Amino acid sequence: MNKVTALLDAIATVITNVRILADSLQTASDVLAEFKTAETVEQPVAQSPEKDEKAYTLEDVRGVLAEKSQNGFTAEIKALISKFGGNRLSDIEPGKYEEIIKNAEAIGNE
Image (cartoon, rainbow, N blue to C red; front, side):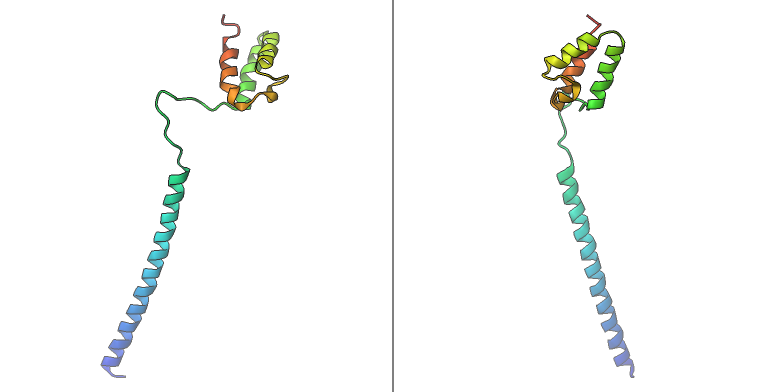
């Protein structure tokens, strides 16, 4: 094999490797673009500073009501649950948890 043929073979190998590299870079770019798109979609919309509300859970409400009940306000707690349309705490809609907690915290502080 002469030097020209060897050089042409080497160049062909380099071209093949550059194409493989370009394909790999394109794949990596596509994956990163998918992550970026998913991240943008999943990020919550920032709330205004004046609306800094906590999303209360059933356990949060149960804890506050249990503490009030242990402090002798069982009748008031039962009345509060009824006021919000339930016979028991699990009957109450989660959207009302914050209001129930605010009402319960006022019990005994009046």
